[in-house]
Amino acid sequence: MGSVDNPSNDNVRRMFDRIAGRYDLLNRVISFRLDAWWRKKAVSAVVKSGHEKILDLGTGTGDLTFAAGKSLHVQGKVVALDFSFKMIQLARVKQHNRKSSRTEFLQANALMPPFRDHVFDGVMTGFVLRNVSDLRLFFVQAFRVLKPGGRMASLDMFPPSKGLFATLYAFYFYRFMPLIGGFLARDRHAYQYLSDSVRQFVPPEKVSELLEQCGFEQVTLQRFLFGAVCLHVANKPNQK
Ligand SMILES: C[S@@+](CC[C@H](N)C(=O)[O-])C[C@H]1O[C@@H](n2cnc3c(N)ncnc32)[C@H](O)[C@@H]1O
Image (cartoon, rainbow, N blue to C red; front, side):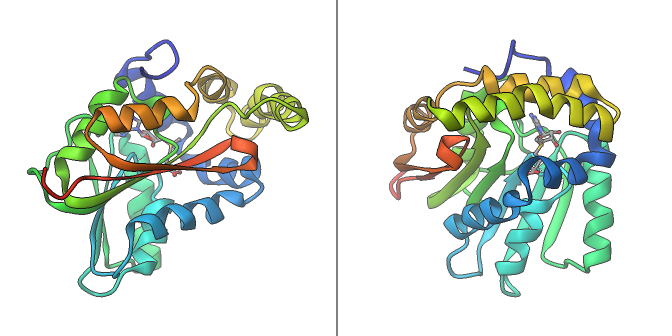
C-alpha cells in the first residue's frame, strides 16, 4: 500500500521543492483555514504533559511542528524532518521569525529516520501518507523510534464517503483545486498529482489495519468534513 502509482521518492521530493514557496498560501486557500484546527486536534493527541519529545515526519514548512511547539513546556521538544530541502529551508526561516526554541528541523527521509529505537514520546505526521513510496515502512519506522507507551497521530486526506458532500467535494477538489494550484503556485501538474493522490488513496480503515499490522494498538479514527480528512491515533504497547 503506498502512494499513487508509487511515485519515486525523488519525484515527490522534487515536486515539493518546486511548490514549497507557495505551499502555505495554497494550504490556507484550499482548506479554508480549517487545517489549523485539524492540526490542533493532532497535536492534542500526542502532547499530554507538555514535556514530551515529539517527532514530526514530513514536516513541510513546519506548521504541525509549530502547533506542537506552542503546547510544550521548556523540557519538551519537537524534532521535525522532511526530505525536501526547500521545505526545511522555509521551516527554518519561520522558526527564526517565531523565535521557536522548542523546535528543530532536519533534512532526512522518513523511511530511514536517523534516530535510535525508542527515543520519542510521540510521533505525528500531517498530509504525508499519500506521498510516501512505502507506507508500511513509514509506520514500521514510526513504531521503532517511539518509546513503549508512546503515541502516533496521523492527519491526512481521504476520498470522502458517498453522498452529496462527496459529489461537491469531487468537483472542488478533483477539478477546481488543480486550477487554483496552477494559478497560485504556477504548477498545475503538482496540484493535479495531489488531487489524484487523494482520489486514488485507500480508505481510512485500511490505514487503521496497517497500523495494527505494524504493531500499534488502540487505533482510533476520527473523521472531519464527512471523512475528507481523518485523524488516526495509535499507541505503541508498553511491553514492546
Ligand atoms: C503535503 S506536505 C505536508 C507538510 C506538512 N506536514 C503539513 O502538515 O503541512 C507532504 C510533505 O511530506 C514530505 N515527504 C514525503 N515523503 C517523505 C519522506 N519519505 N521523507 C521525508 N519527507 C517526506 C514532502 O517533502 C512534503 O513536504
